[in-house]
Image 1 (tube, rainbow, N blue to C red):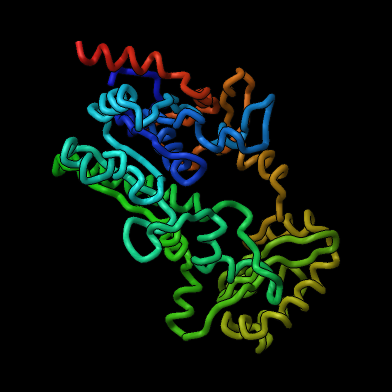
Image 2 (spheres, helix red, strand yellow):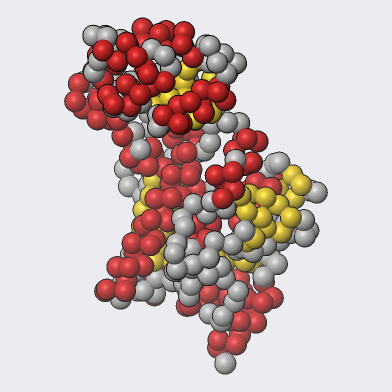
Length: 389
């Protein structure tokens, strides 16, 4: 493909054909874009469904904008012969195709993995779907809520005895997007060694199982089914939210030395040698009693005062920020984790930045604009025509 403006990054020169919509796939391609890849977003005539999802700014979806900045949009109907010819031209020069259709959808159009690999052996084909391209559930539709429920994470979220609770962000979709991006980068490296493309098959349900970490380890080690613990850690104590004189804060004293510092800083030094709390195992066994003791001490001061005291003592702790607090946090600002991009109408929108900081590349505070539907069509068609000359 011809040279176009890209975000400087290690994936400069890589062209990704993005057939995804809504969240898991667009999140993957957003990560690839932030790493420097060119993303050509191929949309159905009605556009990505997320264009109709709120919240809206001047009639434009801020949700869509937050996932699709810096991409180029072209509308193609893959059942139309002329549009298929354009799509074939894109595939000729592409490095990666990313899709999140239900398994089999692209095969029926003649663009599944087997067909594409035969025609373009260097092409990397990445598919993110609810249940993957194998197994008894592969044809089922899935949304974030479904895989959070089926993957076990909802059974671990919330307070003991409370109804099931969804994690507050779409971790079902987002983890699938992240694992797909990891797979694409690994496949690109593999291609430099072998010259061959490969298929990457990522299932949202698989990704939920992969992040169960401590819960899965506990189940296999003990045979006991874990349940929700609120903010409490299942095996490290104290490691949860505590009430203070005017609110709540979190404290994570992950070893005996930190616990001793916590006790001394809160005026309860004797707790560090109390047999109920002298070791982490003892503290975990007596977590409720320890919480009562700690909250009795913490009630004497405000959250802000305790944060100052405990930070000075080197005890890991933090406030429980709402989203408004997060985006104004000086550490978040210093790390450039809130960036801006122009909307389709030219309005400046704020959104999350890229957490991957690289010494070889700048981390710009302003990102390339959000694409209007089909806005890159003319430029892409000219480019394909020039490539044929």
